[in-house]
Amino acid sequence: MIGVFGEVMIELQPYGEGMFKRGVAGDTFNTAVMLSRLGTNVRYFSALGDDGFSESIRVACRHHGLAQCSMISIPGESPGMYAIENDNHGERTFTYWRSNSAAKQCFTSVKLFTSLMEKAENCTAFYWSGITLSLMSEEVLHCWLAFLARQRAKGKLVFFDTNYRANLWRRRDDVVNAYQQAIAKADYFLPSDEDLKTIFKFSNTAMLEQFCAALPCITLMSAKRKACYWVKGEFNTLPLDFSDTMVDATGAGDAFSGGFISGISQNMSIEQAIKRAHACASKVVQFKGAILPESQWDKLSIPSAANDA
Image (cartoon, rainbow, N blue to C red; front, side, top):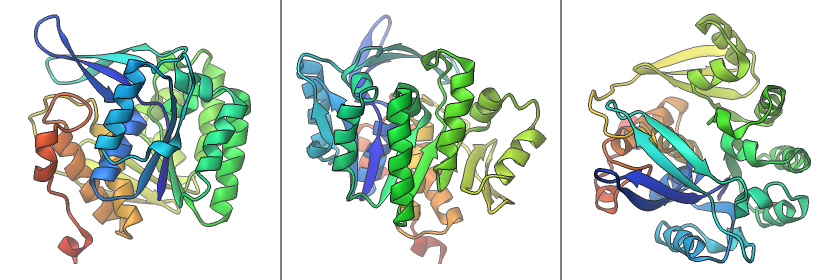
């Protein structure tokens, strides 16, 4: 069972001139949905309120097969919300309303967050992201990293995705220190080259590659028409075919992470898991929003270990 920690929110996506369509999404939630839809046993750990928006999120969780017992409810509170804007190339920008959301309150309270960790003791692997990291108070982060250290000592895996959003951080020093601590507790590190260059101020690709090669964890990074990965410092690449047609890149990285973690959890090789991840991401970018429309899940064709045998 994979435990996914993060914030699920109300999503507003463009829907016609001057209009938005309401949905449910959030980086780690999108990954959890992909994992669940690929048949992986997954729990999503977060906090909601008791309003109508929170209830619509609970309905979405049930619909996607995510267990309700992993959520905590904070009376009188509400979930966060964000709006997406896309340019002519499908690239996106976000506007957030989440500074006092139920999840933010949970991820800054040691008492509330401890109750989440207690629910996750039976998980066999964990996934979280830089957005989750940005929500945490210093005290909660200390407790969380200690929890991950204990779980890794039991042989459980930790997957960490950079998902850096500059507007979620107040101070530059906090960013570098927090990411260094998070990476140190990961077995699989899933950064983007853009995130790494921004977080650590790498001025060229050589600096980035040197950084990744020195990490003790397995590092996977999707680049232009290829995936790059490092295992015990050894650099590898895998060519990938990309479609020139992209409607919306909102959930591409989240789907990629879900596909990859699904493959690793099914004992695929790294290259097999990358191919599955790429297939998931390639499908998601063909549609508006971060999660595939319901009509498309049955049409999602993913590689299995048997395909590469």
